[in-house]
Amino acid sequence: MQKPTEVLFETQFEEDVYTGLTDFPKHLSSKYFYDEKGDKLFQDIMNMPEYYLTRKEYDILESHTAEIANLFASANPKFKLIELGAGDGKKTKILLKYLSENGFDFKYQPIDISQHVLNGLEDSLQNELPKVKVEPQQGTYFEALKKIKAENSTKKVILFLGSNIGNLLHEQAIDFLKSIQELMEKEDLLFIGFDMKKNPQTILDAYNDQTGITAAFNKNVLSRINKELDGNFDLDKFIHWEVYDPETGTAKSYLVAKEAQVVSIGKLDVLIDFEQWETVHTEISQKYDDKVVAWLAEKSGLKIESDFGDTEKHYKNFVLRKQ
Image 1 (cartoon, rainbow, N blue to C red):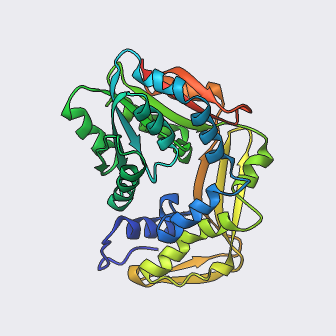
Image 2 (cartoon, rainbow, N blue to C red):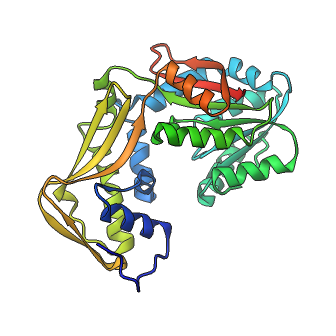
């Protein structure tokens, strides 16, 4: 199926949807789960009893706050605390509260692609932690990091929480980490969350809850296509399916067509054919062990300085620095 020459893509979303749904096998990016509805669904997911990731990282930050803060300030007590994909900053506020109440010399620079998100975070910090110096940076991670690096040589502590690294295949993760490493100096630190390998059933339950919240989240990409690109997906004709390979540590999410069907996407002037039981791959959620994290770091020009885990070692935050 070819794109008609007269159709021009106006947005990255349009191009990615066209490319993904005319490819074989079909695929859509998990970054398109998120709009106002998707953001709310993800908040619901983080509150599910099955979704352990957020809870485990909270536990780590609350149990090791002083130790983490002192590590950030080691060697050079003045630093910039830079968060990639800051969101609402809920977990980060645990650290920010301790740092501000204990007189640490730092500036918080949250980075997010959404100015709306940054405005909300800045407003909440002014109300909750008015002593924290906040300097939001709107843009992609690397655009903002390059800008911050060019400003001055103040030590950088870069936060990348929530095991978001898990949305990347290993080779992509190495490229991502290498790009961060190249913007770091010797004294800079990268504090990054990794979801560790564990009982496979625990992982499957976290991405396929019985109440259907994760299914609705996965299907939200189809809702966005309907709403924004004049699509006519019938969401009831697709099922959410999660698989986990304990050998590779790879969890994958799919949408599976329950019947053969043709979907129209008006904005793209295209018809998409689905065979019965055909899949659309939507997300990867990689799980790790210590050896794999050390290998990713080494391949990226980084080394492990320290790590912090929850009591069951289901989740870890690693501290990395340049080799």
